[in-house]
Image (tube, rainbow, N blue to C red; front, side):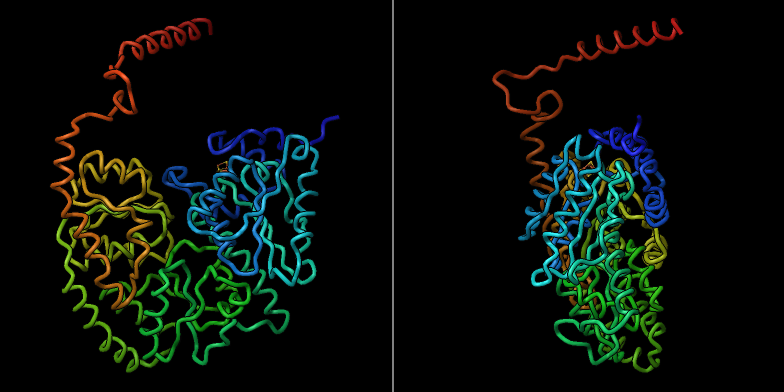
Length: 501
Ligand code: SF4
């Protein structure tokens, strides 16, 4: 007899990043994951094309789990996926154990994998060590319908959070952060509604707080706190939080600042808790002025206080921007969610910015930034593909390319100075007076390297390109005749197949 549950499992097994997204989606839907996939499709719209080229999306959820104290994070997925994700986690300094429940054809198809996951969760649910255990279904277990929703919600006081984070359902690792942050906030909100909950480790703030949504540079919450002080407010928790108890304080805020605009599920929880959400962020002169107004409106702050804050900070921001000018044409792309904010800072620093590409989707939380940039002639591309980023570089002939690894690689091939967005740009303070002049030095140093790039290009010529790539004993020789011969044979085969119907 055919076991219906086995069909998706067998379809999914062996598939992966390159294994046919439609097959995986169909398998997952047939295995009972339609509701989750439909929610992801609503939360993380894919267009204009399917999916930006990016690392495995599950890394976002894994990273959020690994950065939390007293939280165990377990992956359920193919060994190759888990290897890659574990490697990347430790490359980025996780300093935590990544849990793994392995599977094989038999445990996947018979449903034993779910039992193995349950056993692992039971073992880890020690309240002396953990507040929460997070278990992440990767592509194959999601497509096979491994039912994490059937895990107990809590064991010995330890919360159990099971999430599906398939590459065929969650477009970017940025949005995968939201999947876990949203699931945790939902759980914490239900706890807070049911009765008293723990205060954060540092105690409750004496002032009303503004929760900051997005993984910002560590100095930024301090800078934002200084901006909020004249308004009678304080910077609150940063979401994703670093500890479970911070989730309650995050929800217990006067307003939420959607600093990174892609946290759709997390923001849904804040809105369900009745918190107003403010878009954009305090970047540069105009961004800070507009953000202070928006926060003041959300928190009913009297106009004289807003004026006092603006008088204190805006001249300092203007001064910092003027003291650190950027001269040159730039194209910019990334997948962190802060691309438009960085774009604003570059324009206010004097840069001739032509293009901002982001892997993240368009949401209303970045509308003010998009409108501001477009009003200054900058093309903004959401869900930008590698091809679009490279086409922008070719179209605008920039003095500097800020981009993802493959974009930077292509810029270097063309002898254009370039900087990695994630490592070199988004890991700096961006907000308020501290952020105002923070980009100029790294950008200007990079742009001044153009002559060296030209020298290297002239010296190496076409060495290392095309058929010359790699290490060789002899002088490499391209063999275009081989490719032409394959092409002829393939065409012949195709014609024969057409003739025979
Ligand atoms: S879990 Fe990640 S690495 Fe594995 S198949 Fe899915 S998208 Fe690819």
